[in-house]
Image (cartoon, rainbow, N blue to C red):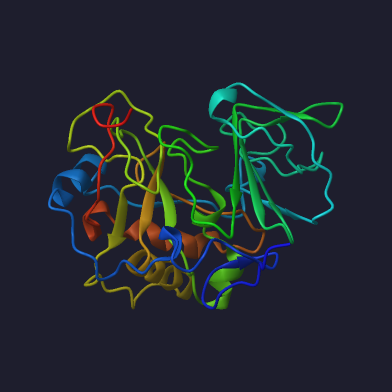
Length: 297
C-alpha cells in the first residue's frame, strides 16, 4: 500500500491528501505574472457581472451545490455504463447505492456524483449519474484520480467535468471555511469558452475560436488590491483563497458561478457577500501553452 500520509499544508479529506503539495490545485499563484490578454478575457466573461456562490443550504428542495461522499477502502466496486465510454475510466467504481447526487435523486441538471475512497485515496467522479436497480450506475462520463499523483488525464479527454479536471478539489467546503483557511484553488463556470485548453485542463467544450474567450483551465485570481476587510468572516476566507490560489475555468455554465459543496449549516446570507465582487476585481494568471485543434493531435 502506498504512503498516503498527507504533506503539511495540503487539503485533506477522509485522511487523504487532495493531491500533492506541488499540484496546480495547491499552488500559490499570488505572485505569478498577469496574462497579457487578461482584460479582454475578463471582459468576455463579464467585467461588471457579479460573482455568484453556486452552493449553500438548499435550492428548489435539494441540497445546493455539488455533494460528495467518503467511503471506506472496502466499499464494493460496481459497474458503471457510460455514454461517452471512449473518454471514461472503466472502473469499477465504489459508488454506494444511496450516493448523493447533485440536484437530488430527481435532479435534472449535471447530476454529478463524487466518491472519495479512504486508504486507497482514489477519487471517483461521475457526470449525469443514474442509479440502477441492480446496484450498478449509468452515467454520461466518469474519471478516476489518484490523489497522491499529479498525473493529468490524456489530452483531449473529458472527465466528469467539461475541462477534464477533477471536481472535488475545487469545491468550497463548509469545514475548511469554518477552520479559517481554504488551501486550494476553486472552480467556476463561464457561458462562452474557447475551443482550447491549458493544463491542468485536458479538454475543450466549444466550437468558438475567438482568442478573447477563456480556454478551459484558465486561472483567474482576485486582485491583490481588492479590500476584503469589510466582508463577513466567511467571505474573507473564500476571498483569501481567490487571491492566493485563484479559480479555474472548469465548465460551461453561468458566468462567474463559483462551485461548492452543500451543507445545512451554511449561512446563505453571508455567502451572498461574494455577489459584491465583480469580474473586474479579477485578473487572468499568465497562461502557458494553449492547446487547440491546430497543435493537439
